[in-house]
Image (spheres, one colour):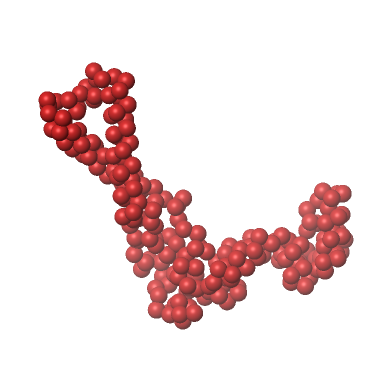
Length: 215
């Protein structure tokens, strides 16, 4: 892929990846402002209906002319909505910069064109494999022996790896090797499959941490 061929031109050292500010898209900006304005308008109408004598209800009754009151009230609501909008956007940008809004590595790898969705799903499936499935895929255990071990586990309620060793179907080294495969992260799997190089992975992790975050 082009992205992989050009990987050497991308900076693999995280310190050189500029930190991008979280971004609220224009569409989201417009939606938030309109939501703030109409929310304040509904609050005003509710207060004016249930408590017409309150100071808030009197905001639209300073003049004898209806249109002057309408313009004044609209102006006040616009200023209040704009103030609330600025505070909301500021809070959202802080929230976007937290770890909870960090994009998943798989999404970053897809976005940068390093692999297809099918390849990503295959790697994710491999990440979810259990110890018995890993041993079967590697040729260290047969499907028949795995099924026998699983039936045995229903009776003794012991870890599968221990039962495999007790039955002589796997060695301690086999079990430890399978357990190490279970603990792999997505980046490690993609590197083992030679989809990513070490430099590619370092650059992508930098994009995951410092790349653009939009709402």
